[in-house]
Length: 463
Image (cartoon, rainbow, N blue to C red; front, side):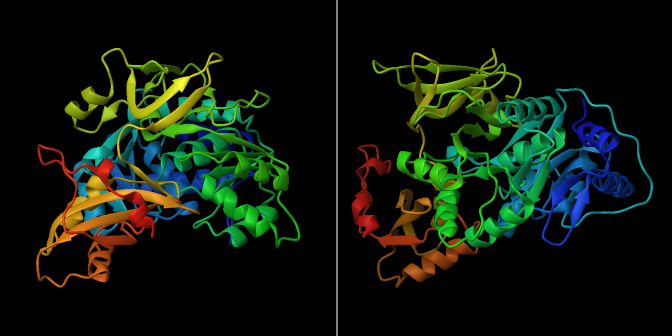
């Protein structure tokens, strides 16, 4: 079971069918398979062998997809990195994964190496998630776990060769990789590749490519609704699948009314290799619910209170193998009998629908991107004039949440808001640095001295 075989089989069955639709090129299945084989040969010429890790620092595009399948073709392990990461973040992830190469462009060579035979449990990709500790952890997605997650969502969305899926989610993210690329190409569909989401421009591209499935976050849907007010034509969307934050009921109704499409709210995790719960076409939908587990995925609520609310846990073939060379973190997240602890709180209704209530930890979700406060706080604490810092999320009309920092500065330091922003901006990804910075004399603390975030005046931050 090598994920590269999905592309190879698709190319053999329909070589001339479009696989990737970009602004400046159309890549057929046959051409994409050839480019993946060339990339594999180029990687092998650079010494990459089965099991080696190869970091991909590439924007959404044909080179990215060719490199991804080229890595898999050799039986090597892809380490997708977000192009928005700052240099120190890139180096930390490369070092932790032990990546032999960092690709910023696709290698090419004329030969065609044979496709390596891989077991389902062999690593295919390492995707980094910092968790609440702020320390990057590499979730190990296997050939089997990605195939299971991709197959589940392809079945749920009835993905087929007639579909064009919007590829605006970063391919370095589990949604873009598992659903955007693997699920779509495994069913003979086409990916309309967008390097960056811009509502007005993306809507025009969706019309041009005849996009039928939108993958994204709620803020994308809101922005597209606004852009549609000035559009002369709308794309033939049949399903919008969103996650990463709750969809306001009225916003969902507005989107469905404007685009004449069903909006599915789902729930996915890097540690589930993609989407874990959503709705199956034709299944009744319940406002506020993220649907039911897909395929053979099991769900349970651990430590439920009197309301039935507890930690959401999953078990099934799409659960990752663990965290790269981090047995302690693996043991903490995945039980011996295979249950993955998500850290999210929720409950199941009588019909088996999952409702998320809150996050067990303090992750800030800004425009669909996870921002881990501890990671940003560590950067702020490194500033010589910062005594204390606390990073939290505050409500934002379009992004869902904005990153805010409360800072206690050294007396007479002369530290400014601009100083703090620039310091963080140079050291973390663009979506992570705090746009809101408030200086305070002291932070609320517990009797043991731990900063008490729930005592922070969030209203004050929003002013």
